[in-house]
Every structure is written in C-alpha cells, then in structure tokens.
Image (cartoon, rainbow, N blue to C red; front, side, top):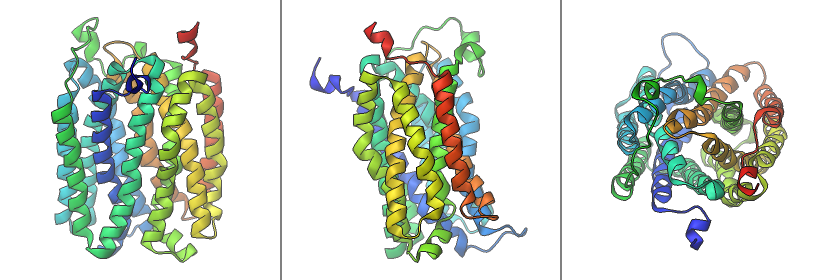
Length: 401
C-alpha cells in the first residue's frame, strides 16, 4: 500500500473533496453577505423581526436540502450512478447563486435559497454514497477527514472572501465569486471522476423505496443525530451577526474572522482525528467531540470581545473535527451495497437540518434572550453524547478481531 493509499487518498476522493471545496465557498460566502443584504432590502409586508427573517433565509437552504436528501439518495441508488446527480446539483446551485444578482425583494431571496437547497440535495447524498463505495474501512476515517477538511477550507475561506468583497466591491462581486467557485467544483467532477460500476442490488422495486426500514439502524441514526447537533451548534451565530457586531463593537470583517476560526481549527485537526478514528475507534471521538461542543457553544452568548468569540469558535472547531469524519465513517462502515445513497443521506440530512434549524432557532430564541439559544444548544450536545454512547456501535473493532 502506497503512502497516499494509507491516508485514504485516491483520485475520486480528491475530486469529490475539491468539488465540495468549491460549493462550500460558494455557499459560505452567503453566510456573511445575506444578513447584510437583508438589512438593506425593504421589509416584507408582514412585519417580522430582522433576526427571524435572517434566520429563516439562512435556514431555508438547509430545510429544503434536508427534506429532499432522502429522496435524492434513493434516486441515486435506483440509478446506480452518482456522478450525473452530483453535476446536476452543482449546476442548480451555481445558477441559484447567480440569481441573487437580480434579487430585489425578500421573497426573491427565499426562492433562490430554495433553489440552492435543491441543488445541494442532489449533490451531497450522491457524493457521500460514492465516497462510501471508493474508500476502505481501514482508512475510511482518513478519507472522510480529507473530504471534510477541504469542505472546511471552503467554509473558512467563504466568509472571509464574502466580507472582503462586500466591503471593497459590493454585493454583486460576492455573488459572482460564489457562483465561480461552484463552477470550479463542477469542472473537477466532470474531468476527474470515473464512476465505478454500479453495485448489484436485490431488485429494482426494493431499491426504489425512499424509506426502507431495513436500511436504517440505530448506529446510522445515532450518527445523524451527532451531525445534526454539531451543525446546529456552530451555525447558530450566523443569524445574530448584527447583534454580535453591536455587542462587541466589531465590523463585518471582525465577525467573519471569528466565524471562520471554527473552520481554521477543523483544518488543523480534521484529518489527524479522522485518521485516529481508524485506530482507536469512532465512538471515543464522537463522544469527546460532543462533550467539548457543549460548553463551547453555551459560552458563545457570554463572549465580551472578538478575541473571546474567536477562541470559543476555535474550540467548536476542534469538537466538530472529532465528530464529522468519524460520524460519516461509521455510517459508511454500516452501509450496505446498493443502499449507500439512502443510508448516507441520514447523516448528511442530519447535517443539513442542523445548518437549517440552528440559525432559525437562534433567531426565534434571541428575541427573548441573546444567551438562550447557545445555552440550549450546549445542553443538547451533552444529550447527544449519551445517545452515541447508548446506541452507536463501534465498527473499527471488526477489522482487528
């Protein structure tokens, strides 16, 4: 086994990782841009607090994606081909991003976020199913770590790029840049990926079922719960950008630096912790990550400076690095041939729901208390650690026994 293979690296893993990098930058640019863009648009006919509007806008993308991911995963299982769905999703996502150039009303923004949600729903389950098919259990944690790391490069760079472009060149430049990065992902998939032969499944009728109880297990659902809590915890602060800036007397760029600190932390730890899960097991990493995510999230509402906020985001990033790759790896370990799209979609749907509901919950609860959403999120992470301890099996031991 070569050095690259020992780290779970192959051509398809790298192509999918780079594609995820491109669409992550394109989407995360909007994390910084949209709250500011909403503030400059006229309010809708029905008076709604701005934090709720921003939360709804940021959440709609994830809600639409999460609802459709199980359908898209079943569709990819039925087709037996992942690459066409990945490419179609990237085309839809890029088109939705360019559409913001013509948006003049809050309703326009909602429709475009729905379109982007459809695009990512087509892309992610197919990508993860392909990852499950082309990786080996012995190095799968490393493979998922590489995939997640490049995704985090995108999520780290996007807010910085968005904040810089809005300040220096205006909103239009940020939307164009976002679409260009999605195009990068599309070209990479088209040129680099040669899809392996479709797996043989029991029967077309069974393969077509969107919700198949036989494909679900406590371990896969538990991994989905972990990714949901992880994503909802670190996405809460996006809705409250204006409030953080006012409380901490910082600019949009200062917020983007603190926001991106989580991704920087994940860049440092994602691959090492993913690789560690190949040796010590998935559960210890998942439980430790959720235990660390709890207090790191709860304290966000009490940050009194940009430095403190940045430090807490670094700890959230370390926690997320311990959760993400092991969660995806354990789901892939437990997946069955011909059902990977539906099984992996449970975990990706958990992540999408977290991104969707985190900002929305934060926007609603912050009307009553700025600290409340972060405290509740922290407690739920501790509950999630118990769920993993109780129901998620350890899959790494099967290799060494």
